[in-house]
Image 1 (cartoon, helix red, strand yellow):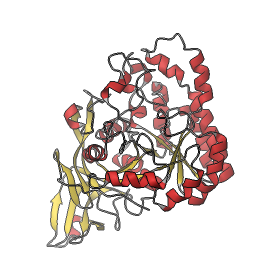
Image 2 (cartoon, one colour; image 1 turned 30 degrees about the horizontal axis):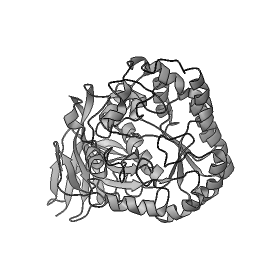
Image 3 (cartoon, helix red, strand yellow; image 1 turned 90 degrees about the vertical axis):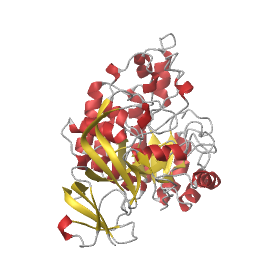
Image 4 (cartoon, rainbow, N blue to C red; image 1 turned 90 degrees about the horizontal axis):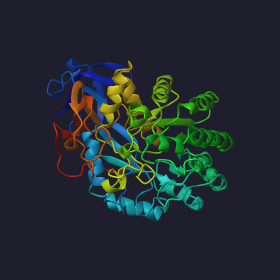
Length: 450
């Protein structure tokens, strides 16, 4: 018997309409997106009414931390939180786990750790570090969808930053692979210069932390990477853009035809420096959350298409590492966890600025799927794609509470906020992995390999 999922608002690449997702009996692939009256008479129909059906979200910036730092997070808890947030595919960053994913051997250790734990699908980024130039192409052949590098110390000793000379030794192989290089784009020079002026500063003040990581660090790094992209012809992706001052050079690079894509994160689109209280280290991240005017410029970057996608940069840690009692930004771990609430956060702020669900689907599903090379199976509700989708009530509201977070440590800067939009269900290949607050039994997720 065929199966069908119906909604008054199915978000497709062609627009939003009342439609049905039709699956053949026993199939996990969408056969057609059709009008409900076109369904076979004997189809088993689930009608979600006014709740929207969006393509399952793809989050290409997640720190799962397993193996090695599972006390920070892990595949079981991260994929559970993802399912509750409407995310059907996670792409895991190559650092914070032990060993770091910079060799094929380390990649296989991560695969073993993930086996049998995942509620949603996942994939592993490889790392480009100071001394692994010989591992770049083997990692591609082993199935990573791309590489991540840091132009500045990343906070963990085992994943080394890469300087320009080392990067240029890696870029020919990265270009040959055809895979994207994801860059944490901050340079140390402007940060070191700023730190010299802050030696006696009060590090409980958010203004001190913001001054310690100036816009210029991002801007100079992005200008460098665009220059190298032009020279070597690799696919460049700028992760977690925080400064709107870089939008001009990124716009010009795209107009030039360079293969450059850009992401920002929910916290840069939601919070503003003016509203962050001193000592509120739960809001520390790098690059930092900047001004309200900067936030609005990032939204305009999304509207224009200079920024291609939104990813969480879910970067959790044990509670003590946030130093909440001391409130010192220089000592606290930098990272914000948001897997289970990212969709409502983005929708809350997008809706009040006149964006629609089709925009959110483009930023949080189609764009990330294209970055990771998954567009053939994910990122849109269309014939031939896997039936992985989220049932979303865009009008409902809720207050963020610990019980709804589901990742390992229930810390969130969104705690207590009223958000718009509730995930009612998440389906992976036609089967519900999360519905009405309950999770499916067993591990339904699998690794996505190119």
